[in-house]
Image 1: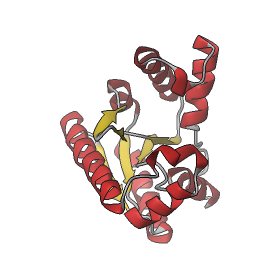
Image 2: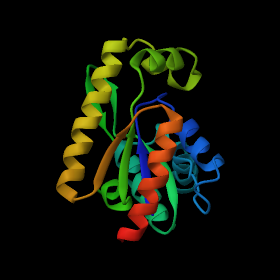
Image 3: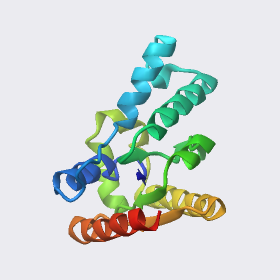
Length: 182
């Protein structure tokens, strides 16, 4: 099964997936690193890192990455739906993303925690000017739009909180039941 863990920057997706896999309850699952993979594909195809590509080339790289994920069996992949940009949002979610995963989870974090993590992340300084209210609005936009998309494509969409212990128990039950449904 292919599970996507979506969420805004610095909400804890990578840490969360790593804890899931380290728990020993998800034997045979892997965590493909989205950013690393996009950069590798971009360098191989265009000789540049992903963020330096044109919008069109980024779309090509995202499509190739989704195709590679579709070849895998059991994954927990992290993903982004959109990014705030100039008072609006730049949506990066694609049709390929929608087709790639069996279930979409959304890791919701406390806006104050995300703001603190952004402040300590060199990679995410472009979001340092966001207030806790801006971060909350970003999460609400992503949750609302991803929920609507998943409803239309008949895929589960589940919002998770960052309480690891209860969430891992839920995911263990969910993934066991979803594999027996299919």
